[in-house]
Length: 158
Image (cartoon, rainbow, N blue to C red):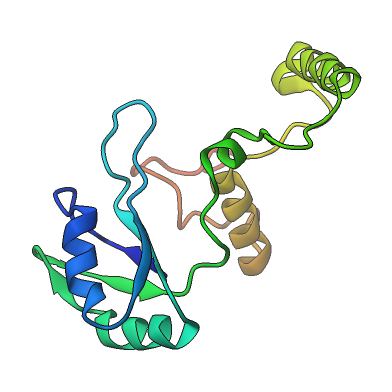
């Protein structure tokens, strides 16, 4: 299960106590920010069976804990190991020649920088583009999203 909106002072033991009364818990994990080591505000709880997880989701969704209303949903996939998070494989990893090739490709990508052919837009930019496409924005007379009280650029044309 994915448990969202947890308080920063909730511990794995707190979650185990609250969710453990519903079924057998195999794992409780609260991800932390790599640099600050602060909790990210969500947790993963793995139950022994899917039925127990479903019961926990149904019972604990919208449950209030330490002043926060929890949102409990099924996680999309299993928790990754630390090596999977780093993109490394411990057993049966790529051969040395493949890793060297990967390093070379990474250097090429880095040298291209933000102007390379593989540039990606930010999620905000993609969101803005979708909104514009949906609402037909981009018309010169569309000033709803303009900041301030200044007139449009062509307002003083004669």
